[in-house]
Length: 260
Figure 1 (cartoon, rainbow, N blue to C red):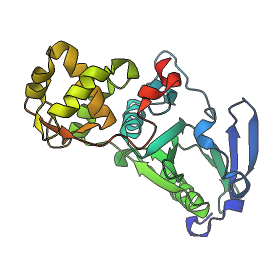
Figure 2: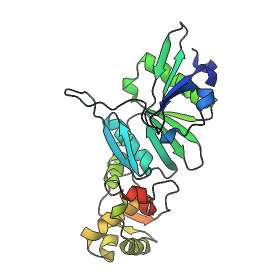
Figure 3: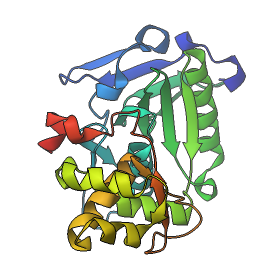
Figure 4: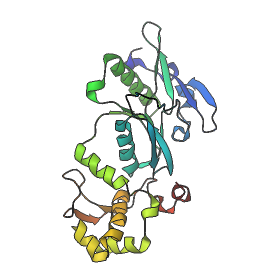
């Protein structure tokens, strides 16, 4: 199949519903399914000698666990979880299949399906440039064309910026709503309204051992903000007032998230 000529009716989609029922049909008929809520299309195996690391990441955005098949996928999940425009996501959401030019059936399972706050959808494949073989490039091209045919965005992403990822990984350790303390959070917002050094601002609120976890939680939720790409978080990092997340990441009010 030529990626330039892909039609939604040419692509067969197979998925497992939230109720555990396997469904199949043309992409053109199934595109409206809430794929951010389906079960993974395949399992995440674990066995001796395995070359990749599978697991489950607890998402503050979803208030539940999302699977991954590598550390790179886990890092991408953290970035999606940190994205204020993301409201929900699922892993291995469906399997696409189509006939190639020789009539052979080709199959591909994207890594993530993402729902944004404005209702739009994003399909994500995680694969660094150096690991893309010719047949992979064809699958990604057809998948991208298939997504476009039903109004979805598609992104093939690789290794994230090391500094950004290190900072987001650190903040992710404080993403759970149990870290939130309203009285401390209110004081931090007051202190950082005009900007201040991270540690200096925390000390002005109280015992840094008690205050810093709340500060990192507010940075995760973007109530407070800082430059996460120019350097690693440190005592002198400049923190200022931000905006509350637009997506589902503000899990403080979420009973479902709190039970996680």
